[in-house]
Length: 335
Image (cartoon, rainbow, N blue to C red; front, top):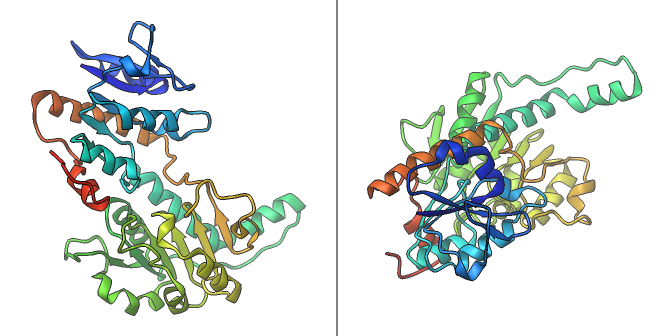
């Protein structure tokens, strides 16, 4: 069986994942393909049955565009393992419509949750003042907000939102979660459905967006949502850029509510150099990098190895989102 992967994934995990009868088809940084023996393979002659996407695809200089263009035209592909939780990109629906099994991954929740806690603590503690003091060699103290006793609203209680909630509660915060179907098992102090969201926004010192992109969540954070946020609150978006009306957010930040916005995702990525977010004093920008913890790489390999074993045995795959991707993108003909 032929498996497509990047040169980075092959070098890092090829020996660990090797199995009898398994061969690698490697995509190089320039988009060219090579067989297991290193010989070049033309795109039109390549016949992989499985493709494993890994985080290195999204690094600068990586062949992410070529990788997904190849998947879109490969007639022999039967299963694609993604490294990410989201499947809102159209290519996922296109693959599902062709009968390709699509699996996502929930290996990034831990680093994203740590990123959120770090970002909020930075704002609460005024860490920028300490950094400025270092640069200026100025000994200046200031008081700061404690996380203990604060109230958090986590919109989207999937894997990421749940990990955020667990960590915030461990530091003494009260957490309200919002999800489509609230449950008593949610790791929060209170769980509400979307119909009750408007009634809890104003209670939150911190609002974390960790919901997926969908028609229901597009523009969720609009002018009315932002107007309902409390004075001194912080908005954190680690979900999708489509969740936020960016013009409305800029206007709200100019009015001082929310106090700050920590944004890791945007409607247009990379964020254009002339976007006003770059220069706004209340905006903290990171380049869709909240999931960048080293540990996710080994977790990706572990998930792929386990799913590969299931695939070879003809068993159901973990995190199979084929039907969901087809539904989200209106694709038909899923087998």
